[in-house]
Image (cartoon, rainbow, N blue to C red; front, side, top):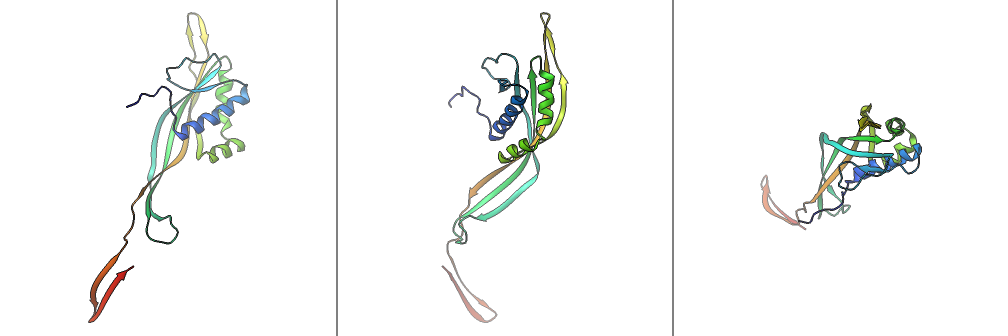
Length: 184
């Protein structure tokens, strides 16, 4: 097993980070959005962290046997499509943290953000909690931190090639008439 040295986000995580980065660029240029709990040093303030909290199935999903060849019944694919609902925790660090959090809590509703997220296969559906002030005081130094949770939807598809029946040979009778089937 090879150890990873850098976090490799899932496609939906990368899409949320890209949207959140664009939202923070509206607050001020140069506000980085990073994944929480990484071993790399944190950037200078201001910055934003993104932490996936949960991803669960919505419903039972859809299962289908599909002929991708377009007619010739030789190669079938079994397909499972599943809608997922997730939650991410966003923390904004800096003296403008409240504005950053409020922007994140509203930006996903803008038509440009909806379209960008749709193109990435993602729908941010609401704020699950916050923005909350979770600022701290360390060594008489105030650290302004705002936190909010965002809910989102996306879908996943798993496929498996299952092949098909290539030949059929049968002999029998229908009533009293003999029947023979040979395919192909």
